[in-house]
Amino acid sequence: AIEFADLTGKEVVLDAYCGIGTIGIIASDKAKEVIAVELNRDAVRDAITNAKANQIKNVRFYENDASRFMVGLAEQGAKVDVVFMDPPRAGSDEAFLSSVVKLAPERVVYVSCNPETLARDLKYLKKKGYEVEKAQPVDMFPFTEHCEVCVKLCR
Image (cartoon, rainbow, N blue to C red; front, side, top):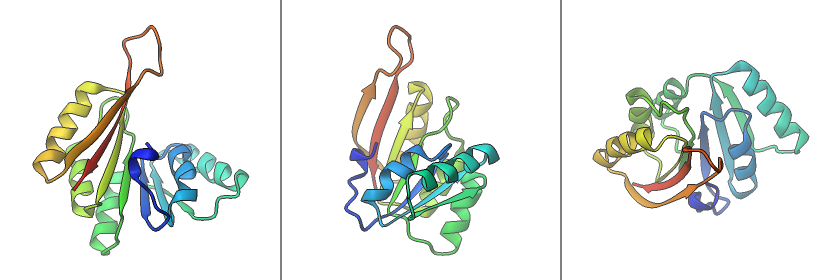
């Protein structure tokens, strides 16, 4: 996912559905700033603890619904260069996807654990001006039917 983001150190990155902050924290040394949002209060608390433990200073964590948060950023005129999205198995809903489109990052890195909802969400993003540049399946759960997929989309 970090490789797909093509970070140069100048980007503002949004880590949506950040959970305990793993992707945002790892991306932080390759980005100017990371904004991370997660609805689960305990996960946000753990993300802050993880960032402190790793002496990360350029990540801000917010407890909020990712869709509402991103719409708010867009309304404030915030510029985000890359959005990482790692939704639950149900994928993203239209409110979230439309908020990505409103925020209009140059790149979106979508990490999916469900190829069916990934296909649905990519179809929506494609209609809104994003193109899939590359995709990489990752078999994180050998001997099961589950497969993660990382996709890089560009506007």
